[in-house]
Image 1 (cartoon, helix red, strand yellow):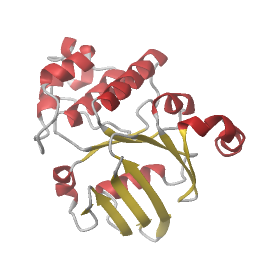
Image 2: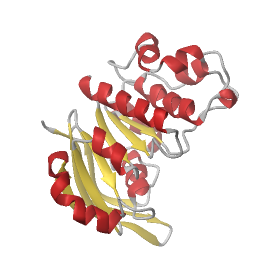
Image 3: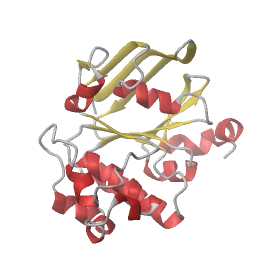
Image 4: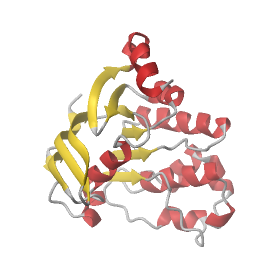
Length: 233
């Protein structure tokens, strides 16, 4: 598999606060990669810097060989970056269907409404309900589904299982496995290690704004002592 996303020497700042310190990573076409780490180590900032939300940055970010460092935030989606933030960003006054149709199609290959409703039956049942009526799990499903319709090449997910009931976590895991079968490339930030271990092909472990380890899912048994120490899992 060739690298779809390449990140080299990535630094980022919030004002005078230096948050990322030379992040190196890659995500191959069709892979699901999870960034692990405690709160505050720079995981969310990594996603926000890749998308261009954090503009005080230096280093190298390439998607399919295209340099994203000079791409303005409002154009990042047109280059294939789809971001689902932890806060989900559902428009509460719009219906499920209106939320789904709001983002423009940026490339061919996005899911049709029929495919989305097959993947998320709950959304079909609630398609005429306003965002205020949705549960946390339904909002998360809608946030993911909304991006899948656009034709994105790289799906960035920030803590998709945070605060959700186990049955919904299971459903989101099933969705990610289905997306993998369709060839979707996913970069995931997740503190729920057990969930991440079910869906990821590969992991990066982050501390103090740097990637300190990289390993495949097959290597998990031999890495557990380290993960216990760093994550407390």
